Length: 187
View 1 (cartoon, rainbow, N blue to C red):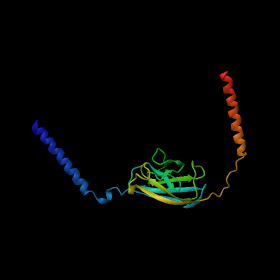
View 2 (tube, rainbow, N blue to C red):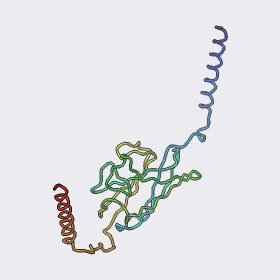
View 3 (tube, helix red, strand yellow):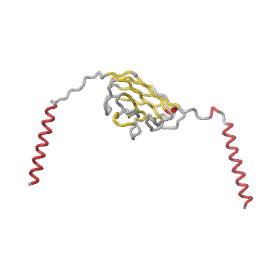
View 4 (cartoon, rainbow, N blue to C red):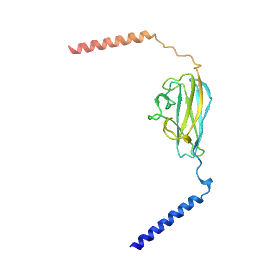
């Protein structure tokens, strides 16, 4: 029995040495490239309410999607999702863009007219990362950024169709009716 075990150990050792030699002898071009992400924003200066085209490439990272978030004045320093500026990135909220496996490219259309939260005029940084982590937790090689400057909206602010006083009056009436019904049920 001991001979059989030592023979098996010898074969295993030979296989390990042969595998190590193959890895050392492998040409450098066959190794996967360093991880890299790119991002472009078009236009890089826009009005709040405009649509921004974000696109880029992924190399050296096996992923089917990239994760996007934005930082800027008044936003959480960790970054926030592009479509909900109220929730920090890394809290389950990310904007994602699918990666085309054939060429590693990705595209996302950011319609700033339909986001949750307030986008103010100013300078913002959009990040693309290869894994769902916020700005404080990604590795140096796993992100890229694009700068976008937002100007005030060109569209006029929608006017409230009713005087705000009417809303308060309606609430008082509803509260009064509710109070009357509550009082009548107690009797």
